[in-house]
View (spheres, rainbow, N blue to C red):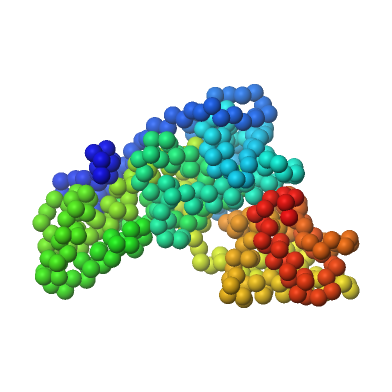
Length: 437
């Protein structure tokens, strides 16, 4: 470990009394984010130099005017009215370099996040009337989730990393900015964080007596196992056998006492807090500064429960056939002749791909992506439901108009197996892009 890394890991984490630290309240650090780049974009209106404060008042909502029980829908609508501007911000990216293109774009001083994005994928047809924008932000949030320098840990229990290179390049700030824009413009979040990490993000000051238990959320499984062994030690001798593994970790966490059987619980609380939060504090602060660009951070911190679905996975929202059926405007409408047969085939296909253990729910997600451009149902639901149209030509393929939420179903298949294969083909090509199937 370099001297710089050692200093950064201890920022916000070392105090003279370890027990006081466990129950202390730490104010967040302000991290400057001066971003510049030679990348370009294409605003329709007069270009402006964009700074981290994009609108008067920083997009903050006056809590005295907002009821704490207001729904996320109302909260976001109020914030959008306050901070979003008229005008179009054109975004052109290539699918195979989407992340690199977007980072360059978000670093540009000509980039205005308050304007409505209009997306074009290079070498693809299609005019963005909402569908391409949803697809773009869905793919972008997937890229954020899977970026090893940004997030780590178990699936749906992700934590913000501590990475000096990412800090120096303001990558956490850019990621927060991306997520804030996805929420504001498309109602798309990143529901992959652990509850304890969301607590750190959603609270300006951290009270260790109120936050969710963070030991199990630690990305390092070896540390989780070590904490368990210490807490479950049956006698002082059991603890003595673990001293070699613990000494360096406790020193990094700021524990300055001799570890004993009596104080082991407090020591492990400190270690869990340090590993889950304190050594990541600079990264978290920079990430939060990015979220603050469009006022999303203030919304999170003033209404953490309402905004939680954008950041924390909810098992109740697993995409099932019944939930997917509910996203269609007319899937339960009885049709005539061949159309009715195709309608039944579609419902059967959706049900069977969910029941097949090879696919589980992944094919439903892919089909949702094919039909809407979304990789998950937004916390506020779809703006409009999908309307099914039955093709009158001889084309054997499904076709989706994601901008207008129209799904065109083939009617030429004389056997269910052929229809089902066409359905799976649509799922497989859900990420290929407009006109690429």
